Length: 436
Image (cartoon, rainbow, N blue to C red; front, side, top):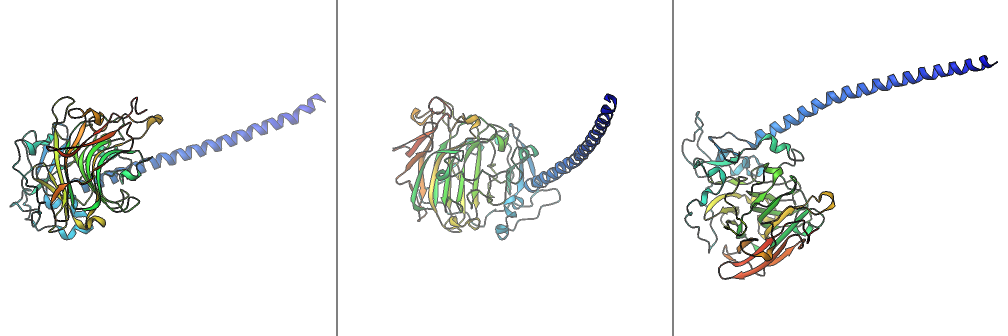
């Protein structure tokens, strides 16, 4: 009886084991099939991404008449004016000037004027003769090399530059929701002086240049001028220029001269520098996105740059001047909605992007990395703050206001005197005893 009781049980066990083997084989086959499919898809996806990056590089890097190697590793291409990315913008097709043909050996037959008429500079601003070396404050110029007339110097974009971005589509763009009024919780923190309530047609200031420490490759620190119009909620128009340290964008920690623009609060329009069509460069002396040298040192020499952004009353375009008279280029008025008329706010100061690793405040520095109260030689500054009024005249900022989003981390102090007019100190170290 015992033997007969065990036989059905043994049959059941064998059947169950066979069933398990069949199921395991089917599962293994499914895994192998999925793995094979993934292995097939992976090269396809990588190939698609590579092709996208190569196409984007081709759209950014244009044929050049001359190439200059910068000591910091940058490659500067001297691109014929009419071949720069600006003229790819659908609204700028009609602005492309008539230029001489390029001969077979890639040289311009004759120089040409990149804009039909020079802009009308604001009253009260007389560009002076450049001081020795003033037009050579970027590292790529230290060798004495320069781009020929009729070309513009463009920093070459490399494959690794795009790979550092979150996506090809977002390369060269700022994160959205970064304006002062919506900075709470967005990661963008500011310490600024600003004017609001009038009609503004430009802004001018001198800003000290530092090399602040940036704690994470995805963060940045900058010092700039903003010219602003529109609603902060969606149709914000801004024009911006200054210096920034951005390891993700540039691949190093050098302060670099930059520009930016947007017409929809940083959503889909505009970009840094010449990384999309829009800004039309006219200077062959300044490379947007190139490193600035020298920089200020703590308790040592202070170095600043002067920037002027203003709306040319003759043609309506927004021009950018660097230093004592270098016309870098202009943003055509056709790019904008609200700024096709005038600005309603001008803003000067510093900004950092805080990714808040591990819940602690970032240690990314703003300005010099020292608080405003430390004053000259230690804190970063903006001096001689001016605006351009309706009559195209430079006047001091009226009723300058200051604001720091997180004053324990980065603060600002406004002052006034005869030599510097309206000015302020700003900045801070980020995470510290005061800023946990």
